[in-house]
Length: 298
Image (cartoon, rainbow, N blue to C red; front, side):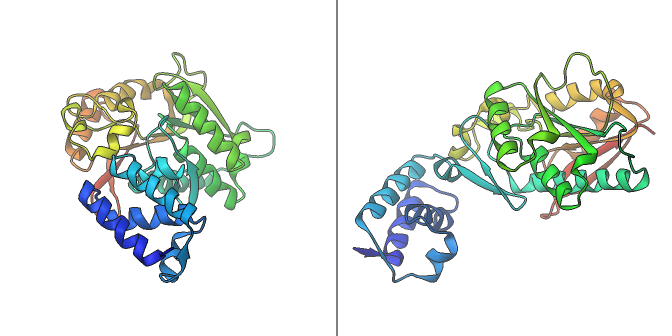
């Protein structure tokens, strides 16, 4: 039998040769999965012996990763905002930069609830999560509000054009115990008619330029292209959503839209063109890159 350290060294070399962007981390996560432990255990016990069956599972997973399959799909889950979300080929894998969207959304919601508490029996604060994918933004937001004992004061509508993605999002909502506060709707951005405007609109739409999608790391080729491709300059879906905001966003409401790190100027210009007189600000992520466009009526 081999030790953890021996298998890790073999795995790192195998993944480095295959072109993995993070061979050490990938090998640690896959070995932890093989021995049914967490990564901390792998790091803390380098001399521990690994059974033959566990080694076979590790080597099989290494082959999948070497072929480009994302670690999140191999493991079946991805950590996001302190939660574990089920992941598979039905939807985009959650990215850490999207956590900023959740943080800003929670702040917006809490400011509104504190400023104007909703007495029992009144309509909950309405939130829309456009292009929900695996449901990470909606579910993480509701989980955060639950910690503040405020989730019962909101109602989330989460939309996606993909029924497969919506099924995955439902699974995540049920798994995290917030399914009673979110309704999943199959729609192209928004339903054709918005019956009631939303006070907070969130969107993490595809924003990669079409000609750049094929140049992404090979792992992205396993994800749905529709969840990545944002048109010639990456802003096609965002522009389409902007045209719906006058009817969809309540007076005094706020929209938070995730954008690419190189899209701040063009996204602001798109708002100026589509929504004259509306205000916009841009929030940077932890890497100091423009990441979330915040906008509303002046």
